[in-house]
Amino acid sequence: MQMKESEVLDRWTILLQKARFDNNAQKELLLFDEEVAEIISNSLHNKGIGEDVRNWNKRFLKHLMKLQEANAKIWVLEASIRKEFKTDPTAQETLSMEEIGRRALQIRDFNSLRIEAKKDIDAFFNRISDNKVDHASAVG
Image 1 (cartoon, rainbow, N blue to C red):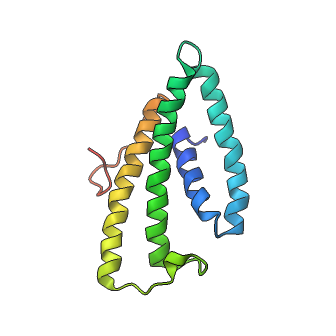
Image 2 (cartoon, rainbow, N blue to C red):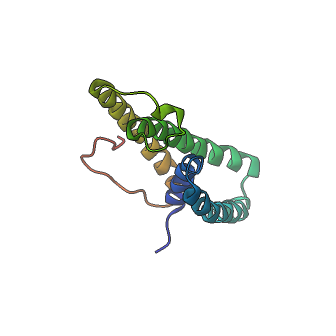
């Protein structure tokens, strides 16, 4: 089963963060780079017909940047809690349980933005969004 564009782009933006510290993620990122390039190329070809490509680019990039921002903020917060990569400056400080809880709530809020961006990307590509019911990160 092939992944939806929103899932590929979500995984790609996460790998962009992870690849800064992990060689295996760098290798995986190369595979996703090709798939993302194909998504963009195919979409430009299909959407470019009858639609101003500049307008398409603006709309697509807005959704992609929203997804990237949410995943980047989630990554920083999670990495600081996990202390996964010793070279990551956010993993150096010792966190109190109160601070870990505060960051977990921030992660939840950023995850809501991430899900919203994925829904926007699904709509952009005329796909059906995944629906999370009764979940703290579910958007409206």
